[in-house]
Length: 93
Image (cartoon, rainbow, N blue to C red; front, side):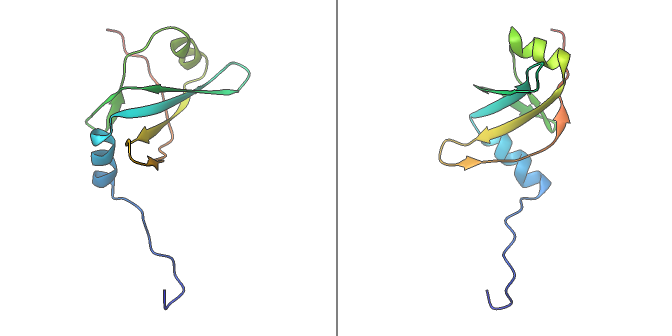
């Protein structure tokens, strides 16, 4: 660029949530007790700026021990990493 500045590729909040809602799969990462991250692919639903998925087993145990987690959106064509720090809260059915 003439002025030496890099162009911004940042999505607006609405664009980011639309991309999340349109994506078929995601990668959920939680932490083992010793702090080692474990990443697993899963299907999800995005509603009202929240991500929902069903799971069982060790993911629930890891969330109960340490709710820190991350979620990576997989659009199927290329990897896009939308980082939004948060915590996981199990919902009873």
